[in-house]
Image (cartoon, one colour):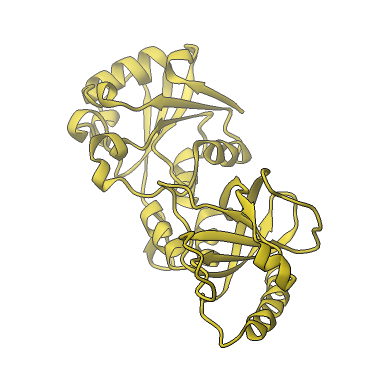
Length: 290
């Protein structure tokens, strides 16, 4: 799939789906269905317009592109969203971006899509424009709940990654550089590769999870502050990668969250901790087989 900045996009006829699409969840996929091009914004518009209200994101731009490619999108066009772009009127967005720059013949949006300065543009404005066909997609409901990025964020923050994965249509992913190993974990027989949670992105709630790495290994992953040991390191994501003997320090690690196994807790002794970690490993293997 081609990833293009708006100013570099070539003018050609396009079927365009427009939105922030954080998570590329099942509701987003309904909006995107039938489009060859996705038009999105980076950073999230609220990070520019009202930083205090900006949500933690489910996906990086790279992960978003990966998910879009997986559902057959041909091109991702990215608007570098800043205060100047935020000042553009809704009509300027339609005239200059959708029509003049992208050559949109079809435009697909969710029913709650708003655009332009002070969000004055809406779906009715798009439907009234005869230069392209507009498809307005109703909000998707599953189990009586609207599928939305905010709902999925809440699920992930609460540890309900298994249900979040169902609504996303793909595993929730955390990835980053392994910043250091854990000598204490190695001494206990469970060496971990550690990631620092990325600012501005959702991190699963504290607890132990069954995960899969990008190269297919299973992992038992602790998210939290390690109450058994006072480290002063703050929140960490510690992955014990099963059946792996190498050193991951300095490499990029991708973790796909499959299931929450238990909450984070303090144990009466190190032996009790070791026994629980052995159980976590077996549960991680079982969760991956479900």
